[in-house]
Image 1 (cartoon, rainbow, N blue to C red):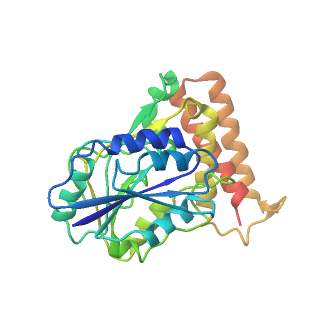
Image 2 (cartoon, helix red, strand yellow; image 1 turned 180 degrees about the vertical axis):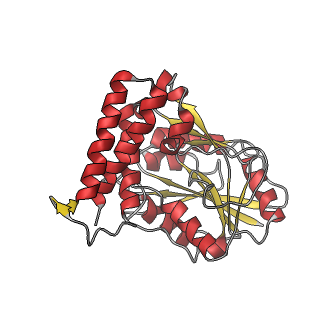
Image 3 (cartoon, rainbow, N blue to C red; image 1 turned 120 degrees about the vertical axis):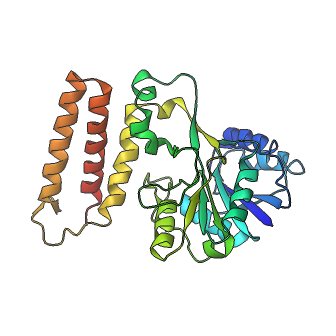
Length: 301
């Protein structure tokens, strides 16, 4: 079995170095060969120097993708890789030593499956604020965290992996590319490109499996441990959800459906009131509702 690990990176040289160093601790899976591909997505920092420094210390190669955007980088990785399976992780992740071993075991147990995914745990920069640490489950999506328990199961619409820790049968992945209008890029926080691909696979009758032993830790810097960051991510989620709206017949105000204005203003009022009068477990979900509502308003057709 031949497995390719793919990482897309943009201006995170220091974090990338930590990710690559951790990959050196991987236990080689029995009966499988693995290689690592890094797609440098138009970085302007010293990413190239970091990659050169790991040449010879990892089964590593890299390519430069000039088009900005995570989906463009992912699609370049699909074009560049070969082998039986493609395993994705991020440039700000620490993989467990048995991470690849767990995936290879799952590939063998479920050869019919199209995709796989495992836990993503938080790796905090310092001590997180209390409002965040005590309510992490409510905002886990904002930090690309995933935890579905210790037993394998088949994915469904309510439980899907994230791109920081997932894998695909290579022959299937070649048929399902990532939407360039989604995925983080310099001018947008709209993500969800990987779950869109997986949902399309399931709609086409393909299956995916949870791999609880394939664990990674995802870095959460201090500047993301803020209300402002949480709001920005869920605003992007609202923009994504607006793509499925049909507002063609709705009455308009300033070019947007009036009902979306009403929804956003009401949600914002509820959040502001609860922020001044209630505990985080009350105002945090209202913040999420308000952020999503404003995102839907901005992106509504």
